[in-house]
Image (tube, rainbow, N blue to C red; front, side):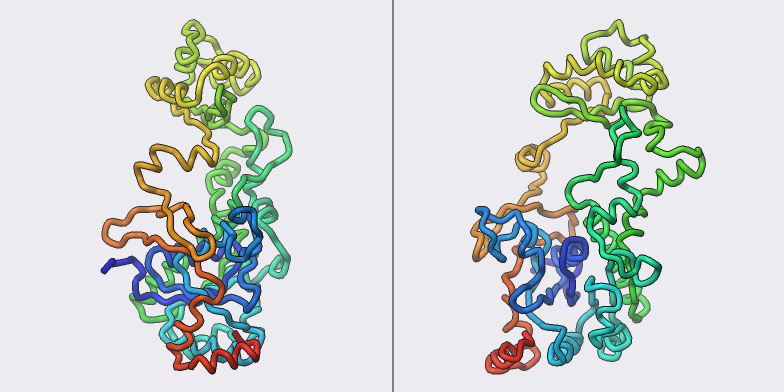
Length: 401
């Protein structure tokens, strides 16, 4: 029998969307029994978000929902009904953690305040995840990944190095949401550790804006100590280029020469006489005239392939790296060697390939699994509360489940 890190842990997952479900996904993938509470008929809104397998907008074919909900159990439960609230309280017995992102004050309005939950299970770890937390002037504002990325301060730093006064841009891939999920996961685990050592529950109030801002510590420190920001002077310490991308023969290559490594770029582009040119030997010269530096480097880059450039750069101790497309990530030899991608069978989608373990634990491994169908585990979970099939049919008629 596998020994998973969170084996024996039971979580009631009242989350939807991206960030909070990513938190509960990590708990499930490392062994917790995560019971996902979904609204009858509709389910988590991400079931309606693409991309969909075969471009078929079916609620069981969303790639996003699949990824965010692997290894969870799905039950349907209408918390807007008195019967649904009573049933939820019965589910609390033997539960270790409740995680929700329905909105500040929503659980209390339903009759499921922290006090009410702990009257049933006194040592619960209860986590409330919202855009701005449970207090403050933004508490009830609506938000999205875009607004959180902007308000958290991260968007301000995203500009091209050659033109730092350009408009800020957003990173792809719902980064604010996933940062929120990671910080939520860490917070829940901290609450569970406290519970295990002291035998007491914890209430966690997590605002996504703060989670996003927490990754900006270095930028904020630079501003505090140096009186400048990455917007007005993007490379104040190490000089240009640091991590900017240059077009090459088959895509893009990211240039990071390292401290004092820029003269080696002259060797890389087969122009050794340029090693002593100020553009290669003095960071200030490159920062002042990045266009001139690019004009010397980019013609050579455009004539060579990304991995050819990378391999030569590594020999010269230049930390250059290819910018991989999504398709290239799927076939990358490093990830293949690490067996990162997994596949499993799904009742509606067939065989699905998806990202696997973010970390490898020798004694308590990650587990492979699929996302649940809507309400797939109703009978398993509710029969455990001594309900019969006739009871479930009646609760469906009453729109409780």
